[in-house]
Length: 464
Ligand SMILES: Cc1cc2nc3c(=O)[nH]c(=O)nc-3n(C[C@H](O)[C@H](O)[C@H](O)COP(=O)(O)OP(=O)(O)OC[C@H]3O[C@@H](n4cnc5c(N)ncnc54)[C@H](O)[C@@H]3O)c2cc1C
Ligand SMILES: NC(=O)c1ccc[n+]([C@@H]2O[C@H](COP(=O)([O-])OP(=O)(O)OC[C@H]3O[C@@H](n4cnc5c(N)ncnc54)[C@H](O)[C@@H]3O)[C@@H](O)[C@H]2O)c1
Figure (tube, protein in one colour):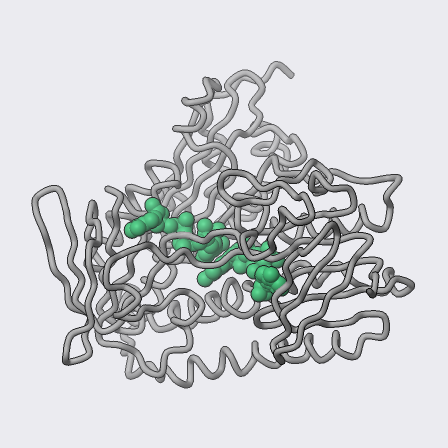
């Protein structure tokens, strides 16, 4: 049986590990789906390309406020779609091609599963089976959309984020079941393109894992743009004779029905660990199916590392990339390993409006008994936000009252994912709010004044 020095399962962030520094090693890479993984093919990149097109499509709806009258004439969906995938698909194909001709790498196109200690069997797409072993492994198998057990769903047919971006035409109406990242981003995309969007949420609020004030503000704004059904549990779906989809929902006051043309399921993602038969090699998973790793990203089996959505609860590309860098270093420097850093993991939702967050929410600070003060700065009260006539956006910061160390930041409004970056930097390097606000210039009248003013408002009293 062939033994590889290194076996990587999954070509998302896992693929970034194998570079020239592994040229003297015999490497196997295994991929069951589209080369390049979720972010490139089904996630971050195409969604943000659609979001950008949606932002452009949405401008006429607000431009008159500035004395500029614009009209949205048409959204040529197939052109939008084909421009995006016309740019993405060749990157995936090129990556695959490169790996298939990589001198020290054997690329397996198939599904891998462990069949013994450090032994992998791959069911190749061409119908053949390969069995080999590895000295060391990287499990980078990612996650997949959860499909809830709603009666009628399988027979009716539905989309997930894997398929929705490749629709043949824009539907007149779409229902999105779920109320998290995917729901918020696709509601913006389809809403801006003129589709009637209904969000069906089990919870009483959208984006409920955000800071409460941000979630409340987003929900309020979403209710003005879309048909938002809160506290609605979908109990049945069915395809009608005319091809439309009938959705039946239960809510606290009774039942509700909805008829749409397409259905998007967006209720979270589950790790792909169950495809790997990890018990055969003795790797532990937790109750949520995540591969358990230590601070070096190593599993309980020496030489088997894991990274990304298959192991961490964040399910974000920048986290998968960070972990891939840690794993790469530790594979190359087994006697001088480094630890991954999950202290301040930020995220952004590219919805309308945009949202970004890092650190503790107020509810989390309260639950953990951490003393904090907060300050809120509205976009409307800083020069650029005022110029834009933004009326709904704000930044909220949390800090320790005695040390002024930043504990969290939550922003809803224009440029939120960019505005939050200096706060992530300050938290990562221990820069306190007081020093951050006062000991540097803030360009006037640029949007980061939102952060400067929020920091200045904090009632903090550092001793030095
Ligand atoms: C719609 C959407 C939008 C997103 N937007 C963002 C964003 O804006 N910013 C952000 O930070 N994150 C975003 N994410 C999350 C981000 O895409 C993921 O966190 C990231 O791609 C995870 O990388 P990974 O390497 O862990 O897994 P993946 O990229 O999923 O790679 C895993 C690979 O392993 C393969 N595989 C699985 N099992 C096996 C097996 N048994 N054998 C062989 N191969 C296998 C899979 O086919 C897959 O290609 C988004 C996700 C979605 C769905
Ligand atoms: N901008 C980004 O970084 C970005 C964008 C998209 C996706 N992602 C990643 O992908 C992951 C998956 O996104 P997502 O939106 O599918 O998940 P999510 O975890 O963000 O939200 C899922 C929502 O669905 C609700 N839900 C669960 N079961 C339900 C059911 N049966 N019926 C109705 N609602 C139900 C949950 O309460 C939750 O609010 C995210 O957690 C995120 O990590 C990131």
